[in-house]
Length: 588
Image 1: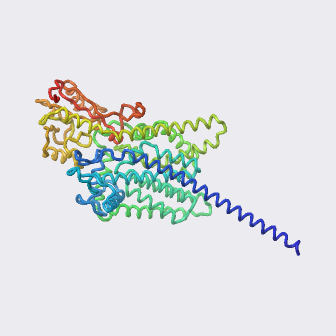
Image 2 (image 1 turned 120 degrees about the vertical axis):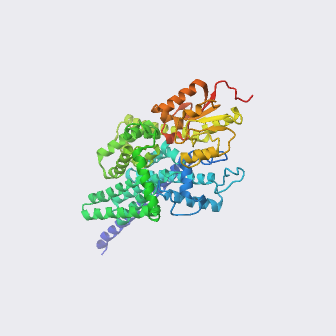
Image 3 (image 1 turned 30 degrees about the vertical axis):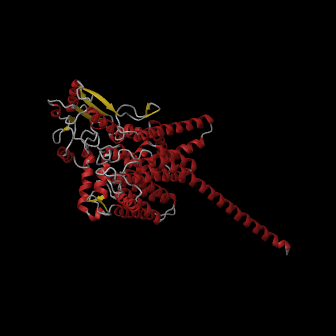
C-alpha cells in the first residue's frame, strides 16, 4: 500500500512546488509593477514641476486686459465665460475648437471659486484679489493644461513599457518630459495639451486592442478618439490607429473571422461618435454655429493667415526644419526620424498602429497653409514611444561596448540638449518680458502728450500703453477701442485694415515708434515693400533701443538669432523702441 502511495505523494509535492513557484512569480511581478509605477510617477512629478516653472508668464494685470498669449483671452471670453460671467454652460457658442477643454476649464474655475484656491486682482482693482478675475481664470486654465501635460508623460511611459519594457518606458517618458515643444505649450490655456493627452490615451487603448480583442476595448479606444476630436478637430485622425488595431487584431489571431475585425472597427466608430458628442455637445445644441465655425477654421487652414506663413515653402519640410527642429532640438529630431524609418521597415503591429496616426496627421498638417508649431504636439507620444522602443531593442542587440556606449551618448546628448532648450525658455518666462521693459522705458523717456506711432494695430505684441491693447477682439474693433480710450500719450495708429502705414510717420514726426518682431519678423522675411520702406524711414531719423533677446543657457543662444515659429516667439519677442535722434524728449 505504501508503494502505491508514493506516486500520489510525489504528484502532490510537484503541484505544491508549482503553486509556490507561481505565487513567488506573482509576488515578483507585483514588486516589479510597484517599482515601475513608482519610477514613472516620479518622472511624471518631475514633468509637472518643469511645466509649473514659468506658468505665471504674461498674465493679465493692471496694465493689460488679457495675457500676452493671443489665444488665451479669446478662449476665456468666448469658451469659458457666459456673457462675461463664469457659470456652467454646455453650448459655449464658440467652436473654432472642440469644447471639451473649455468645459474642463469651466469646471476647474468653479472649483477655484468655491474653495478660493487662486485669487488674483482684476485690472480695475489691483489691490483686491478675486477668484473670478481674468488673471485668476487664465491661471486656472493654465494649471489644467499643466496637469494634463504631465499626465501625458505617464501615459507615454506606460505605453512604451507595454511594448518594450521599463527601459523603453523611462526613455519615452523622459523625451516627453523635456521636449521643449511639450514643455512650453503645456503652460498655456489652450486646447493643445488636452488634445495631446487624449491622443496618447487613444493610442494606448489601440495597443491594448491589438492583444485584447474585446468589444469593450474597441469602444473605449473609439470614445477616447472622439474626445480627442472634441478638443482639437484634426485629432480625430487618431481613430485610424484604433481601426487599424481592430483589423490587425484579427491578423494576430487566425481564429478570428473577417467579420470580427469589421465588428471591432464598427464599435470603434460608434465610440468615436459618442465620445465626440460627449466632449462637444454644441455640435447638437447649436448646429448652425458649430458648422459655421468649423467651416471658418477649414477655410483658414486652406487659405493661410496673411504674411504669417507666406513664403515658408513646402509644409512638410517647414514642419521638420522649423517646428520639430526647434521644438525638439536637432539631435532628438534626428533620433526620432531615424527610429521612425526603422519602425516602418520592421512593420510590427505595434509600430503600424502608432505610425498610421503619425503619418496621417503629419500629412494633414503639412498640406495646410496655417503652420503653427503647436500643431505638432499631438505627434509626440507616437513618435517618442516608437523611438524609445527602437533604441532599447537596438541596444539589447548590440554586442560591442563601443556601439552600446555610442548609442547611450547619442541618447543622453539629445535629451540634454532638448532639456537645455526647455530650461532656457523656462528661465525666459520667469524674467521681465520685453514688452514690460519697453513700456517702462517709454514712460521714463517721454513726456505726457508726446506721440507714439505703431506700424500695425497694437495687440499682444505691443507694450501695453493701454489695457485695451490686449483686448480679445478683431483688429478693427480693437483699433476703435484704443482710439476711443483716454491716454497720456498721443497714439498714432495705422489706418483701418492697414499695416506699415507711412501716414503715422508724417510731420510732425512722432517722438517714438514701437515695433515688435512678432509683427515684423514675417514682413521682413518676405521683404514686404511697405514694411521695408517703413523701416528704412525709421533708420534715417531715429535711434533704436532693443528690449528682450532669444533664450540662452550659460550665455549660449539655444535657438539662434534667426527665424522662430510665431508661437515659440510669443514668450521671447524683441521689442524695438525708435526715438528721434536729437534726444530732446528725455527727462533731465
